Length: 554
Image (cartoon, one colour):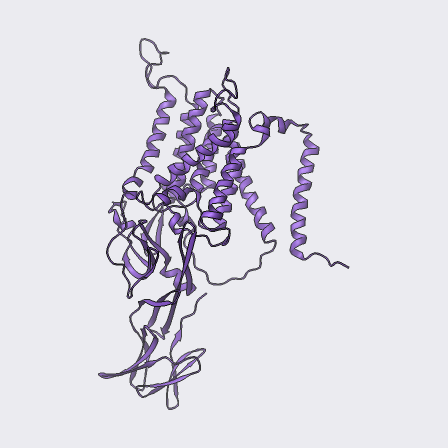
């Protein structure tokens, strides 16, 4: 006799059943009688947003087959597919269509599925200008418009967001924001509703994937959530979409939404998508958030978009002789010009940065770096950031001359200089991996931190890099001395390439020996030491003093 499904399966069935019941209820209560289908077929071939589906398939293909996500769904290769420099075309070409992980990919695909159809609907597969016939040219053929023109526009916007993005960005979110900008100009409230629908879809996906979650309080390591957002890339994508949408409405003479709907729609969308989170990196895992300035910029942007879309074709300053003459620049073009200048101001700084190369010379670190097909991997602390510090800019009390600490990856041919793992994250985790690669290949370098905390005297540690048969010590910190003085002797812990050792000093004499294994003992400088699970103890006669303990990780 078959057994009952487990709890997770029952929860998934409950979710799917509730969604199905809700759908049936809406159909029965609304009795659309094909109204929804007719509306979609009036704009889409067979009522399907084919351009959106082709774009989603293309982004998914890059993740699966270019980044290696097919074999490593949660751990794709990312470093070579970022927009590092104009001198590295592969990164520039793939950055907008690559992703840092499965969660990043799913988030952008969901955003595309809810926002791109609105943009595609506003444009339409069928030309809407009077007197224009379909199938007479590639630009009017609905199949070409759906399967070629719309995806080609998506690719162009993706390349634009990568070429003019600050820093080594990765992800399709710039294009998703362009979809939103294009949709906001024509359907501002529907766009906000679509964003809410996207959040609902992500919640539904999470509930199906993991019906129940059990967790408990514990230590964690994280950077501020807003420090992981490519605000500049999102902003130029949104502005590009707004400009394209405004051009389309004006060219076709479409009905325009009210200023109130535009302002509300742009503000709600921008707040929901954290466009207000303007921040800067100060180095040393420190960030500064300009919250008030960001909110003011969002409201100003909404006002400017509304003024541009709703404004008439009348000149900004009519001539005295003929007030109705349109000899000067139309009012809406003034707003469009301001939007274009804003886009240029955001995108322009990326040009000199992307024209630079990474810092040259030897990499910092105590040992030779691990080399993998042109990549160099090492560990260093408080060294100039070889990517950010190339361009010296100071403004509002901040500067690009910042230092960094952590696992450093460099590839001179690709123009890559990256703090792949920060010092704080490695200190928290103890062990991590750095994935290197390119099209069709991937390699992994393991990073291990081990250390001892002297009682009252700080921590001594070393960082090893492991690749294949190689195991090198990339960094060893300075010795630390424990506070307790045992039988007139000072006890210090030192890092060596082989491991850690005890240094016992009295007056001008010192003696050293390796720290024994767990439950092992050693005699150093007239003291006995035992390494127990609770720490390293110094013993003399009947006196037993803990002088250090092994560093623990999470």
